[in-house]
Image (cartoon, rainbow, N blue to C red; front, side):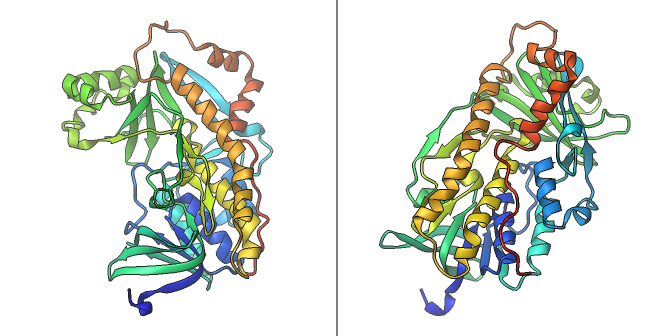
Amino acid sequence: MNSSSEIRTRCVIVGGGPAGMMAGYLLARAGVGVVILEKHSDFNRDFRGDTIHPSTLELMHELGLLDEFLKLPHQEFARLRGIFNGQIAVIADFSRLATHCKFIAFMPQWDFLNFFASKANAFPSFALHMQHEVVDLIIEGDRVVGVRAKTPDGERDFRADLVIGADGRHAITHTRAGFEIQELGVPIDVLWMHISKRDGDPEQLFGFFRHGKLLVLINRDQYYQAGFVIPKGGIEAAKERGLPALHKEVIALAPFLKDRIAELDHWSKIKLLTVQINRLKKWCREGLLCIGDSAHAMSPAGGVGINLALQDAVATANLLAAKLKTGPVSVTELEQIQERREWPTRVIQAMQVFIHRHVVTGRESKSGDSLPILVRFLQWFPALRSLPARFIGIGPRPEHIHSPAIY
C-alpha cells in the first residue's frame, strides 16, 4: 500500500447511519477530526426506520436545530393507535411527556441523515466519504489503528486514533475484531413491500394486529412501506402457498387494501427482512468502539432501534470528545460507553423478546376477537398510556448533549 494513499485523522467512523452520523456531527462540533465512511452512494434504504422519537427531537432542541429540522416534510402524532382484532385502540399518548415535542414524528430516514450530513459538512474537521466500503481493520499489535476501504479510486487506508464501528448488524468492524455475539433469538421475520396509497386511506396507525399476526404500514406520502410479520424462516413456506394466499392474509388485517393488493404480482417486489435481537458481549478493544446496531441489533418492535443508536452516539461524544481531541483514548475509557449504554439496551431487548414470544409471533393464534388484556387496560385507564409513550418515546436512561462545542 502506497503511503500517499493513506489518510490520517483523529477518528474514523464506519457507517453513515443514525449512530455514525450523530457521533460524527457531535465529535466534529467539538473540534475532533472525523471521517465517516459510508459504503453506499446515498442514504435511500427501504429498511431504514422512519420514526423520530421525542427524545431525538429533544436532542435537536439542545443542539439548536429543532425549528429548522421540523421544516422538513414529516407527520406528527401525539398518540399511537393500532387496530387489534378489528378494534381501534390507543396504545401510547406522548402529550404528557416532559419534552419540548410531545409527539412522535414520521420522516424518511434518508431525510434525517441528509439533514445531519449537511450540518456536519459545515464543520472544518468533518468529512463524509460515500461509496467507501470498509473491508478490513488495520491492527498493529493488539490495537486497531485504522481501516482499509474500497473506494471508487481503489483501496485506501484510513488511520485514526479511534475507529467507531457503526456499520450495522452485519458489521465488518465487530466481525474482524473477533467480538462475540450473544443471540437472544426472535421467532419472526418481516416481508417488506410497497403498496400504493390513495385518498381516503386511514391516517397513520401503529399497526394492524390479529391473532398473533401483524401488518405495519409506514406512510411515505405516495405509497406505504408495508411490513408483514411471518414466522422465522417462513419465507419458503409463504412462497409455496403462493401470492394469492399472502394477499388474503394482508387483506384480512387491512381490508381497505383489497383494491390494490394485486400490485404485489411477483415475489421480486417483496423483500425479506431477517429480524435479529442480539448484542456484543464486549463493545470495544484498544482503538475500536462499536455502537448502534453494530453493538446491539434490535427488532423493529416499537421503532426504538434508531432511538437507542442515537443515544449511544450522544453518550460516546459526551464521554470521549474532549479527550479524543488531543490524542488516543484508552480501552478503559471506551468501556465506559458500554457500561453506560448496556443497561438500557438489555431492558429494551428484554421487552422486544417478550413481545415477539407472546404477542406478535407471526403465527395464527386461537384468541378471540376481543382486545388483548394489556391493550384493554390502556383503554380503561387512559393515564396508563403515558407508560408505553415514555418507553417508546424516551426510553430508559435518555442522554442529553454535554459534549463541547467550538463551532
